[in-house]
Amino acid sequence: MNLHDILQNPDEHVRFAAYLDELQQVADADEVDLVSRVLADPDQTMAQSAVLRHLDHRAAGLCLGPAYEGWAQTMTQATIDRPFLTQRLGTWSIFRAVTLKLPWQPDDLLASSNWLQLKTATGTNTEAVKLLAEAGRTNRIRNTARIGLTHHSE
Image (spheres, rainbow, N blue to C red):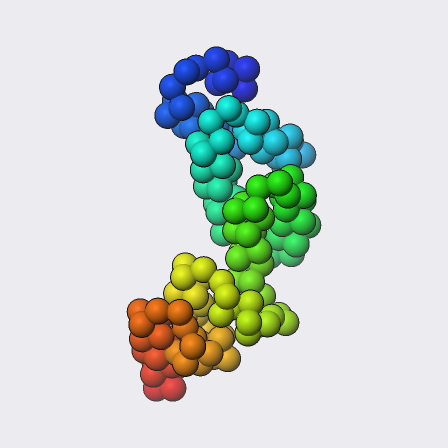
């Protein structure tokens, strides 16, 4: 199904599934164009949701490797007028920095989403886990980090 056919379908659930299928199969060279075209769908909530799922899937696969940086910059430009999507890419970049022990700012981690704090609290960056044990946003995050610290010291 091509994008023109997808847009002709009045059911947003069908379009959502078709977009996910197209995004999953897109060649790297065509990714920005496809993301832009999906985001042009009249149902903005559905379109952003499809692109968000795509970004999460791609970021999870790329974030620990060298290709992530260029991809994230390109996708940030492609989603620049969608604050939620650019914020999610920023979240993945913080996760990458903490996980790979690259330079990162404690304030960025503390201001990040519950998802990122919880994911980081179960990680291996002791500095980040200690920070979250003391100042994580929720009891669950702080407790998870404390448990992680206990396991790391055994």
